[in-house]
Amino acid sequence: MIGVAMYITIKSLWERHKNKSMIARLTGHDWKTVAKRIKEIEEGKEYIAQKPHPRILDYHKEQIIKWLEDNLSGVRIHEKMQEEGVKVGYSTVKDYICKIKKRDHIFIRMHTLPGEEAQVDFGYLGYTLYQGKKRKTWVFNMRLSYSRLDYYEIVYDQRVETFIQCHINAFNYFGGIPQYVKIDNLKAAILKANFYEPIYQELYKNFAYHYGFHPLPCRVRRPNDKGKVESGIKYVKNNFFLGRKFNGEKDLKERLFKWYTRANLRIHGTTRKVPREVFEKEEKAKLIPLPQEEFKLASVGIRKVYHDCHIYVDYNYYSVPFEYVGKEVEIELTRNLLKVYHQGKEIALHSRLSGRGRFATNNSHYPTYKRYSDTEYQEKYQAKMAHLGTYTEQLFFLVIKEHPRDWNRTVQGILSLGKTYPDEVIEAACKRALSFGVTRYSVIRNICHNGSYLMPVEFEKEAVYAIG
Image 1 (cartoon, rainbow, N blue to C red):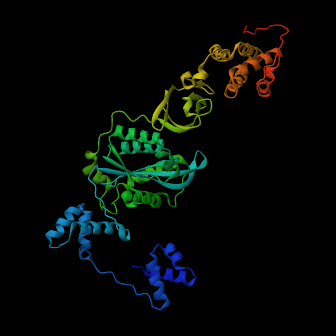
Image 2: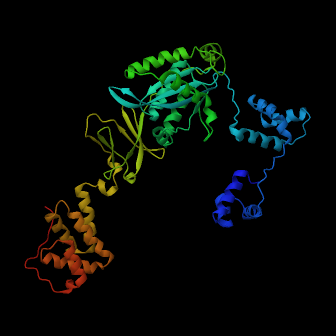
Image 3: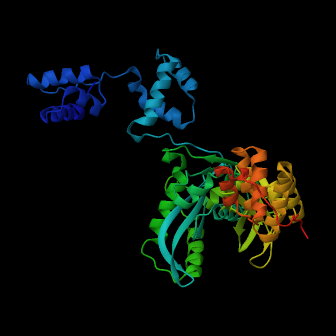
């Protein structure tokens, strides 16, 4: 069925000389349906809205909503309908319940048990004074879903570490921990960007395990999943921050604490009860006890591995395996250690360095060829040159003598000629280069290319070059 709005849209597009195929594509309707409507338009027929036929369950809608608010499942509601003599199948009841939840922004109020759940969220407040300067400010709210007892805290960033510390402070304020903590979908840019990185997930998971609660992320595009805490954010904005001025961080935090201490003693608008009284009488004893040791919060972050196999952390440098050069890795900092992860796997561990500009380097993080001593490195290439012939090996010694710091580039170039020329050609070219005292790779390559290695060679003095 096409509604009146879509009927008008089709009519407007047709009058603007759009063809039927284009109208079908633009409106998402079948071509035949569009053609039928256009025929009616051309015949001058007006749109007549058809009234939907009421379904049998429409007469029981209010009762079904009440059962849903009492947390009855679809199966139990179907049984209730049968008990009341309504002959309807379970699939019909299930579909009707789904439409109730989706249509007209209707949502089902979820009731929780004492100590079962808390909801958390951040609310943006704009700029406030912090250490004499204006700075972006947020308010963190954790609300116990049963008693509606609130904890609020002012923060100046939305890092995951801050998010966790706010949890710890809230648990200390309540004197216990709920079974579940409902987390918003983290729409704030900084927190959202970081929270779903593996290292942050691992940190929050470890934190939740230490305190014994279960994180419960809200469903996407389901704002009522966290409706209680969103009400808490709206309440603090409208009733505390609106119309007030503060003389810096200390003044703001002190006045906020006094305000929500009093606010927890008010009669709550929904429950018509005092949150603090409900908490003390019914909920406090149901909370999970605080752990004997507080969670040791590590600093975490992302770093890019430099070409020298090191990352930069707090003005110092720490090595990681060479295969991660150019990639981003996650770090976790404690008082004495630095752990480096990639996609959740630990790839390096270092003791923290003091001071600045210092290096913590594990030689095993370099490729094998980078770990040779100078002597071992030279012996490796000497053997390769000797394999080509005696004159090639002698040229190797001459190159080292004349270019002690960058000999390897020339030697690697000569060895690469093996991809194009036979060993005997390279040997003959090196013999000719030796006779003229030439060590440049480009000259040796040209000797191979132009065939001059075939020309006779005379040594004025037989010279054998060796190191030392």
